[in-house]
Structures are given as C-alpha cells and as structure tokens.
Image (tube, rainbow, N blue to C red; front, side, top):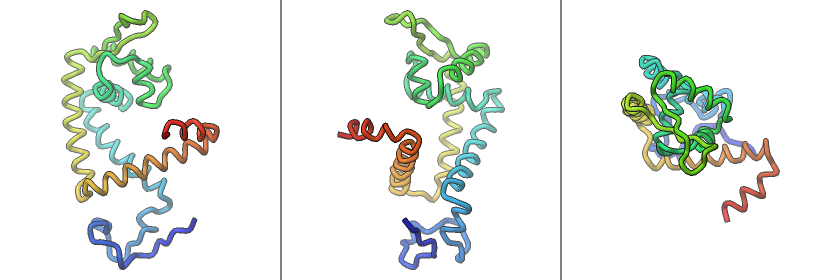
Amino acid sequence: MSLDFSPSTTEPDSLAPIATAPETNLQLLLAPSLGAAMGRAHRVWRDAINDIAQQLNISESRWQVMVTLVKVGEGTSQQQVATALRIEMPSLTRTLNKLEKQGLVERRQSSTDKRSHELWLTEEGRQITQHLQNRIDAIFDTVMAGVSEAELKVFARVVDNIEQNARLLRHPDNRHNQDLELE
C-alpha cells in the first residue's frame, strides 16, 4: 500500500492540521513514521500525568493501577486488573505491594475463592485517585483541544484496528480466535 503524503487541496477545514505552517504536509507531521508520532504524543501526554502524580508521591505504574481499579470496579481480582492493564501478574504484584505499603490499596481474600484476592482502595487511596482522575480529565481536555468528538471516535477505531493488526503480527494463530469473537 502506498500513501500520498502531499498536501490535499480537498481536505475539509475541520480535518486540517492545527497550528501548523501552510507548507507542512502529512509526511512532516508523522516524521519519521506514524508509530513514532503516536509514541511521541503518548510520551508527552503520559509525562504530563506523571508530573502531577509525582507531586503526590505516586509513580506511573501505581497511578495506572489505582485509576484502572476504579474503572474496572473495586473488589475486582488482581487478575482482572492485570488483564485490563495488559501486564503480567508479577509486575502487578510488585506495584500492589508498594501501594499497600503506602496505605493506598488493600488486598482482601475473596469470599468466593480463597486462592484469589480482591482489590480495594483505602479512603486515602480513593481521595488521591479522585484528585488524579480530575487532573487527568483536565489534561485530556487540553490534549484534545481542537479535536471533535467525531474525529476522536474515528481515531479510536483506527488505533484499535492498528493495535489488533499489530497483535496478529506477533500471534498470527490468534486470527481464528479473533474472528470467532467478532461473530
């Protein structure tokens, strides 16, 4: 597949790049590649969140666990959080140990499966997570300034498609399983 990186004269104004010089074209915006551009955007965005979390003595791995725990629901299993974060259990266990030591998370034995632990935020953990989430939401609004909801939805679908295709490169045997899930 070949992409035309020359500036388009038919591109609607709503999709035109924001705050770029008129001679800027897609190739310059995505230099050296689309993956690199996505990586740069992710790092700058993540760093803005990390700056706020550091003020609260919370590392990146810790705030990600705390925010994810709220999203998937307190009382969920460690395995569910690891799956949601797409990390291995040993990595999550190390992070949970640190969060417990800080008094921000509690692990409680599951009432239905004695081999499993449920995860709960402490009151202090809830307060910090709420503060972080408010700041993360404000950062999101700033990062998405000038991007319409329709553009964001299309972008989300494209990124998801790229991720799924990239996963198939690493695990081509999952193509059949993925096709079954879509039916």
